[in-house]
Amino acid sequence: MLGIHGLLTWLSHHEYMMMLVILLMSLAGTLLFVGNLFAIVYAFGQNIWWGVSVLFIPLFSVVYCIRNWDRAAYPGKMLIAGLATTSLTYASLVILVLLYPV
Image (cartoon, rainbow, N blue to C red; front, top):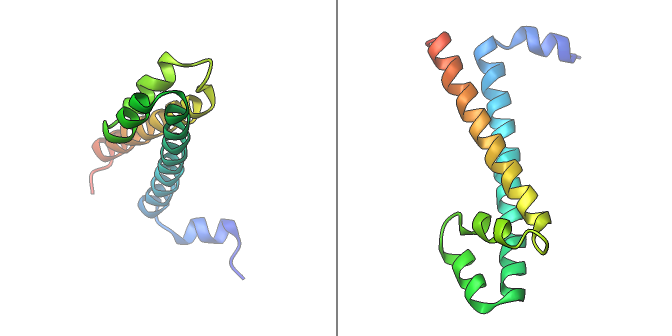
């Protein structure tokens, strides 16, 4: 049976980094999706126009959550965490590609 140490030595460093990037981007995508769903529900609960705007305008859910932080802090925190995770993962991937070209 292969333990975690055996798995990590079996994989190359590039494969290990790509697995980590896929895991982080999956986490970020989940945070963005769930946060956006909650923001849509909260926005429709407040006003029909907020709900339509959040539903059809990309990233307007972040604007809604910031403007209505007292009401929509929970989805706002998820959206900000998802955007931060996406940005940091992308920046680290760019740095890794520049340092270690394939």
